[in-house]
Length: 150
Length: 75
Image 1 (cartoon, rainbow over the protein chains, first blue to last red):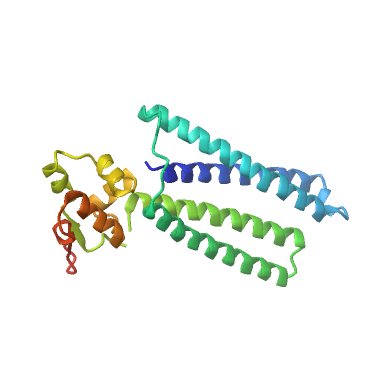
Image 2 (image 1 turned 135 degrees about the horizontal axis):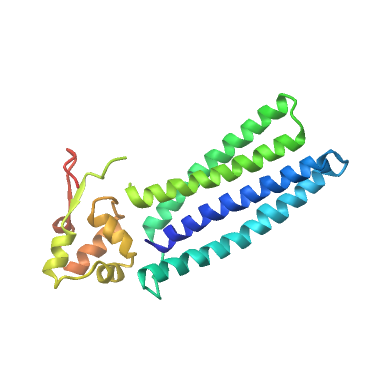
């Protein structure tokens, strides 16, 4: 398994973990009525920045390190090749196209929700969740292309 | 998408060159071992540059390594 493929597994796991944690936390805040307050959207913004962005970066780095350690132990290769090549870059581009498409669909869905009179809270979370789903889909496409070829 | 309509003789050429490993070929070509494996199994069509580099490692012309089979006989 190439270095990039291992990192994709790490990214997939960290996106699922961080998004799950974000949804649980936001659900708790919602239950406590935090978002009904005048500064509710500011709290949501801070939550996204801290959990999804900050937490996402940290968890992704930790997951990448753990995945590389696990594979190094499983394969007995203490110095795996970390190089990338044209195939990695091609797969990255193809998966990026899927992510961009997913984000576009998410944005349109959010605008539809807005047009139907949904609150800013719902619309913003729709953008965030579809963004996370686009990221997951892009990672899955990457893993399939590494295995199946193209 | 199915396999590309290109077959190759990399496995045979490696065998004829002292059982060269995929890792050794990858290092000389400048790609990862996984890419050599994917090319050898017909799961990836390399760029023209990498194709020429592979042929150069074996010291043979490009057509001795890769064969275009548009009728779908590619591996």
